[in-house]
Image 1: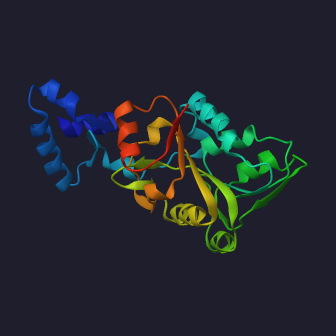
Image 2 (image 1 turned 180 degrees about the vertical axis):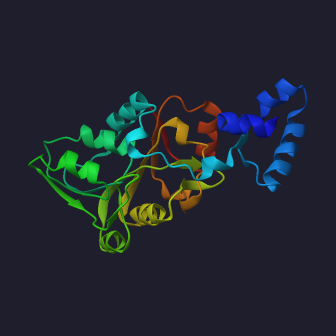
Length: 244
């Protein structure tokens, strides 16, 4: 039944399952451990997720969930934008929301691996927009590969606004694609300040490849859908969190 639930919904909550089957949470926890050993699910804090969740990557056109939350996060991120200098923008729907409201009243040099974000910003006369170059992934329209890594190795931005597929206390910052994991990881090393923009659905989620530790995140901006217990776990792990 636990496997059927996690396959149907993508996640199983240990406490809810204990109530449903009228057993202790310790019994559920032991069952989840055994099922994980069989490769049927992946345990996370509070329960488990489907194995498919570790590698699923929605196309950019499908990333429309939690758009109001993403827009709130983007508006809050404006407070972290410098008046002058260099800004690095990661590929992703929440960072894309930031690009849509990016101010036109300041002289900034913007670097991005996102074709969508570059096209959003290029018409603003006071911005100087650079793409990193490289192969364009059809799924996300992100530039990856040798040219992009070479550009990042020579870059030092004042602040980076970053996206992610997953963030958890257990596994850090994760994404399903190897090429994008390489670029995202290098972005953390290419900026003096690293700000992660992630709606609450990404938190507690584990994707396939880890590319950054929680200690690499200077500020996480998320939405009020993040539960208090998850907020405390992140803060206890040393993450500075702003809920909006």
